[in-house]
Length: 292
Image 1 (cartoon, rainbow, N blue to C red):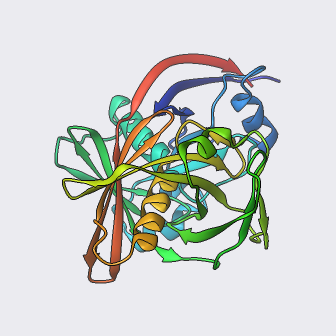
Image 2 (image 1 turned 30 degrees about the vertical axis):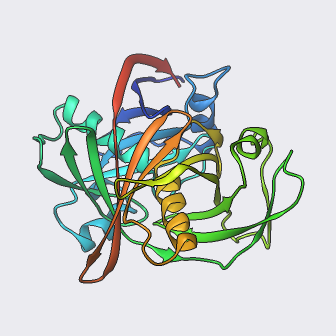
């Protein structure tokens, strides 16, 4: 027996998502159904699928409410292969726009809302560029695995960074190398992280620092989704890694150019350690109905 799912298609700098509302947690899609929706040939097509559900309506939301009882809404995010993910920096901005446009939330410029995720509660502020999300504390994670990618001649050391989900960032020597990498193939990590990782390939712009702001270019292979036009948490990880490599005096504000546009990253000290934020646009493109 099929059911009709009303959905919205949205994107943040080309990182695209299928979103649907299920406030009371009544819709239980299997990983295979989610993958079918995200399929670009036989489904709607997306890098991920996001269910808008109240935190109290699903088991994963209990931890969010325990962390912050104002986190009414939970971003139930799944990659395009149907696997769940902890966080999505582009997805959470598009999710906030979806909540606002559907009357589930009211957020003016400069105002902040809290959203539950599997990676913890995130504070999100509306601004002129779209939204800025505080991704909280970050951490160096997993040392320096070797990374092999198709069309890169030799393995490169990567830097493991966790911003609520795992990343490995690789510095390349030129834009030609960045363009040559074939990310339709999954990069090989040695050693392989237990839960996998998103892998970012980065080159500095020329000049790298202008008016106190760092500038880099990035491409990404997302765990469970393949190469995408943008990865928000990946842009944050790439900026953090580049600042780490640049050493003392490197800026705390960065512009990250991805194939789908430009994202902003900012680092600042907080009581519980250094926080990092991501800012960028969020657009809802169209709505439709799909038989499941």
